Length: 79
Image (cartoon, rainbow, N blue to C red; front, top):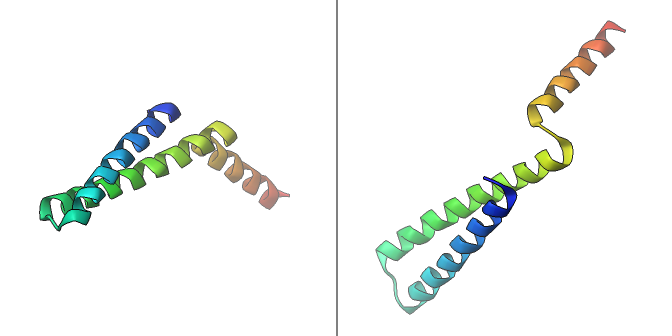
């Protein structure tokens, strides 16, 4: 998923969450409460994916960063 796709999905799910919360404010419904919980979990995962995508764009691939750090550590131990 691209950064723009992630953002679009967050906005779409947030709008649905608003609708669900509006309906829940009128009275408790177990189905809506469950949907709200699922929406919260999906949105949290998407925010995490967005943070990871931004970090990758800014700093590069995480695995390459870790590989470079390990190489630097080995060099400093050898010195």
